Image 1 (cartoon, rainbow, N blue to C red):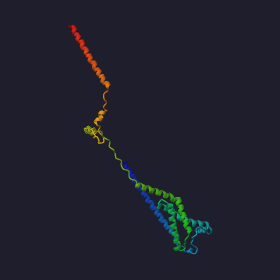
Image 2 (tube, helix red, strand yellow):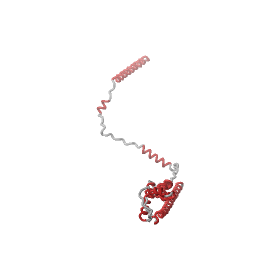
Image 3 (cartoon, helix red, strand yellow):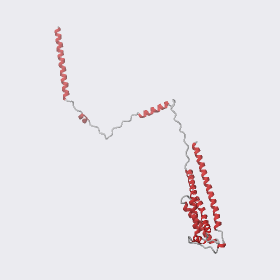
Image 4 (cartoon, rainbow, N blue to C red):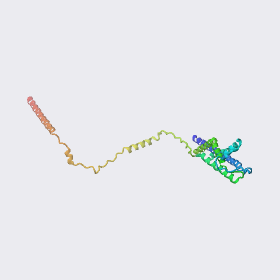
Length: 267
């Protein structure tokens, strides 16, 4: 039961995180689409009144110097600040859409590509607009600023959430534990069977092993050598036996003589 509850909770978490990821991606895509429409209206609208005043700029810093020298403070801030703000959404939205690895470099590369294309279209097709390299630099700086302030944290949390869902989906589900039944004691009915089994085991263990035949390598010792090994009896033992035999015969003879004398006296 506990394993089933854990698996259900795990599935709910996975579904919740995937739904949250989908909502974040949809919101990011919609915001990027709205920003692209606004950027196109701001940068690609023609201005016929400024055709004689606008010139293309291929030197970095030339337009910034002109803002500082020829424009008022408010006009310079409006011109430079507007270019910076145009790049901030790229730094917030693009890190969510690109992969986590090297996301800052990828965001910068995409921002530079988009802004350079817009500037080329302005200089080639839109009247009253010109290509300006300083505008592309300011837009890229605004993207970096937005990434460092907001986009880095948001993209970091989003990618952590995505990695957690992928790991949870890839991890195998825990198997339910099986209950081990307790071992029951042997009943009276099973005792004869156990006794017969033990007897059969004992008989199989106590069977005599067949005697091994003598190998051909073992040579039989000859009879002569065996006889030679037998030691002869010592002479001292034979002499002691002979002396004991003689002493016994003498005692028997003396006993007979005494018995004969006694008989003669009685008569």
